[in-house]
Image 1 (cartoon, rainbow over the protein chains, first blue to last red):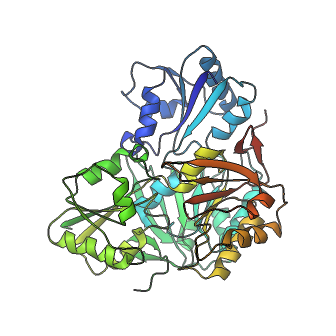
Image 2 (cartoon, rainbow over the protein chains, first blue to last red):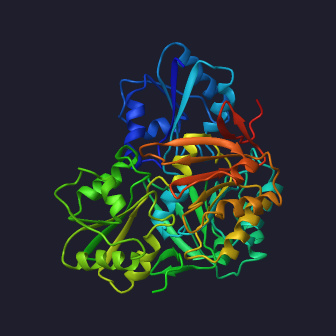
Amino acid sequence: MKYKIYIVGMGPGKEEMMTFQAVHALEASDVIVGYPVYLNLLENRFQGKERLSTPMTQEEKRCRMCFEEALKGKTVALICSGDAGVYGLASLMYEIGKDYPDCELTVIPGITAANSGAACLGAPLNHDYCVISLSDLLTPWEQIENRLRAAAQGDFCIALYNPSSKKRADYLQKACDILLERLEESRACGYVENIGREGTRAVTCTLKELRDRQVNMFTTVFIGNSQTQLEDGKLVTKRGYRL
Amino acid sequence: MKYKIYIVGMGPGKEEMMTFQAVHALEASDVIVGYPVYLNLLENRFQGKERLSTPMTQEEKRCRMCFEEALKGKTVALICSGDAGVYGLASLMYEIGKDYPDCELTVIPGITAANSGAACLGAPLNHDYCVISLSDLLTPWEQIENRLRAAAQGDFCIALYNPSSKKRADYLQKACDILLERLEESRACGYVENIGREGTRAVTCTLKELRDRQVNMFTTVFIGNSQTQLEDGKLVTKRGYRL
C-alpha cells in the first residue's frame, strides 16, 4: 500500500468538536477534499493545504478525485460532517477503492449528530437507539416507513436525520403519523437546530406537537422511548437505575 | 446556576480520540470523577487535578459525589468512556440533579463504540442503524429480545454493546439465534476488540460464524443489513449510489 487517504469525520462543525486524531490527519495531508460547506467550516485552519471540492450530488466524482490525487503521490483527506461512516462517504470510498488497489483507506471517526444533538437536549439516547434518515434520495420511502414501524415496535429511542427539505416539506409529519400508529401522543420528543454551529437551538415537545413543527435540513429530531421523560426542560431516557 | 458540572465522553480510550472540547472541560475542572479504569486511561494528563472514584455498581454514589463536590465550589468533570449519553451516566446525573437545583449540567459528547468500532471495520453503519446492549443488568432480557427482532425486521445495521461477560457467556449466541430467525446465515458481520486501546483487533465473519465466536466485554459486535458486503476484508454497507 503506497498511497494514503484519510476519510475524516469532522463532527458537527466547530473545530472544538473535532478529535485530535481528525486534526492530526488533516495536518498530515497535502490535499483536503470535501463538500464546499464543510471546507468553509474549517475556516482559516490548514491554510497551506490544497482544497478541492465538487458540488452536491457529485459524490462519486468527489471520491474519485481523492484517489486520483493520491495516485499523484499526495496524502489526501476527505472530510465529511459528523461521522464519515454515518450517511457519509466512507462506504462509497470503499466501493470505488476496488478500482485503486494501491490506495489505503483509513476512517477517522467523528461525533455524529445523534450524539452531539443528544448532548444538547440532555440524555435522550441513554438506552438502545436507532438512527434513521428520512431522505428518500437513495432509499425507497417504503423502506423508511418499515424502519420507523420497527423502531416503534422495538421501543427504541430514535434519532431522525434529514427530517425535511424543500422538496420533502411534509416528511417529518408523515414519519410522526407512522410512529403515532403505535406511540402515545404525549411521547417525549425534541429537536436540535444547527448543532455545533452558530444558532444552536434545542427544543423539547410531545410527539403530537412534533408532528406539526417546521424543521429544516439542519435539524436532528429525537423521539424518546417509553422511559424518556422531560426533566426541567431536558429530554432524559432512564437506564433503569432504582433511586 | 452557580455550580458547574461537565459530563464528559472521553471516546474509546486514547486521548487522541477525545475532542478538544472534552480536553478543555477537563482542564477547566478542579475535580475529575470516574470509574477507576477510565481515570487510568487519562494516565499522566491532568495531574494537578483531584481524582475521585467509586467501584463498579456504585454509579448513584459516583453521581452524588459530583454534586457534593460541586456544592463545595469546585468545577467538576464526570468522565465516561465513549459517549456519556450512550449507556453512560448522563441520564442518571439529570435524574439525581433534581435534588441539586443550583448545579448546572453540561454534556460533552464523545465518540461512542458504535462509531469508533465501525471505523476499524470499514463502514458497517453507513445507513440506518440500531445500537443495542446485551446486558440485562438494568434491562429485562425479554425487552432485549424484542429489540433484536425489531432490528432484524427493520433491516437495520446493528451494533451490539456488552455482548458477553463471565456471567453472560452465551448471550451473543442467544442474540445471534434470534437474529437468525429472520436473517440468512451468510449475513456479513464483524467485531472489534479493544477499540482505541492497546491490542485493537477487527475481525469480519458471517452471522453463522459470529454465533460461535468467543467475545469479551471489551468487544463491540456489528451485524450488517441486507446491503452490507465484505470488500477486501472490510465490512461495507452500501448507501445506494449507482456506480
